[in-house]
Image (cartoon, rainbow, N blue to C red; front, side):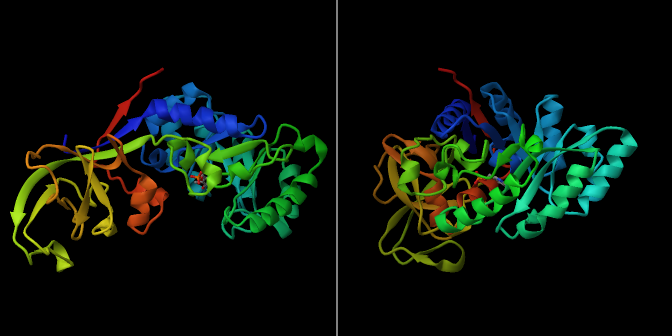
Amino acid sequence: MRSWAEIDLAALERNLNLIRSALPQPMKYVSVVKADAYGHGILPTAARLMQSGVDLFAVANIKEAAEIREMASGWPILVLGPLLEDEDSALLEYDLIATLSSASELPRFAALARKRKQKIKIHLKIDSGMGRLGAWWEEAGELIAETLATQEIELCGLLTHFADPRDLAFTDLQRSRFQKIHDALPAAKRENLMVHADNSSSLLNLKKDSIFNSVRIGLLQFGVSPQKESLFSKLQVEPVLSFHSKLAIIKKLPAQTTLSYGRQYQLQKSSNIGIISAGYGDAIPLHCGNRADALIRGNRYPIVGRVTMDQTLVDLTDAPDNLEVGETVTLIGKQGDQEILLTKLAEDAGTIPWELLCSITKRVPRVYTTNRE
Ligand SMILES: *Cc1c(COP(=O)(O)O)cnc(C)c1O
């Protein structure tokens, strides 16, 4: 294979168990698998997560929800994003839970439910300071009252989303705004309600006995820590994904040669340059050129010159003479005692791990390992 992403489903399962055991109280686990399970491939990933026992899947839209539903009936699926009106009927067709975020959606859902003589399940979203989806917290009372008064709508959850979990003071403010709304619900309605806000970046700030009884985890279950902070170092999640390619050509180039488009890198001395058979058309971000490294035979070599769509250059001048074309090159993952973390590559490329995972293209086959212990 030319380039491939290896997906370790056993690591996914271990991460899930680790995250669960780090929660301050028994909580429902909402597994966020939008964007093709963060590039890991929705079907194998969701299948393993079902076996490992998540409580609910969350996706961005109807199309993603339908993919999971076609694999397994019965499993609860929450659509996090807003629906367009012509998508509403898919809620019933695929037995999905909608996120209700504004007053305009409620009459639409109610009319549909009445017509089909079925109930529509929703989680109601509060905007406690994210400034994106959800009913603005100061005005949410009305939408909640209308929701509770609508027979056809079954309120199953209440959620909010944090804007900047590293800012503990602002996150606490969001929690308290949200809590006010939660506490104002009739006690009978609060029972059996899923209450959730925390994602990968905030879950370790969760306190015991809080109103939150569920978490919504995406990135962290894939073994990528959103922050370097010490809080996360105690949670030893393992990367689920690694990315590899092959060394296609090794060539000697004279001093003063400039490499690749834009001629931004000039060789100071006669050098051995390796050409990796992958570029940003696969998964190597454009802006990691002259910053990131690649691993070959357990050694690190710098990526030089601008990354192109199909080829990436590495400086192999310091490599052993017997290095050969066809050797495996690791851009994300481990070789021997060397490791390139996805977060580090994202940082080198001036992006975030979420985006880097979403930019592993269709051209890259996902290879699954499923070992059980
Ligand atoms: C994507 C998403 C999450 C998961 O966030 P991670 O940082 O990947 O854990 C949680 N909630 C909502 C609303 C999201 O859109």
